[in-house]
Image (cartoon, rainbow, N blue to C red):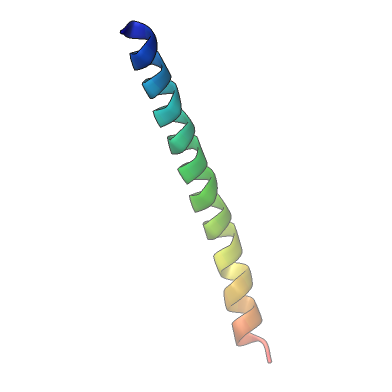
Length: 40
């Protein structure tokens, strides 16, 4: 029972880390995309 719970917690933590990485990458890429759109 506890093992299953620990596994679920580990999976949830991995998902949180992945979403943070995606958000960070998005924040880094947004200005570059805006610059590409603005520049002729």
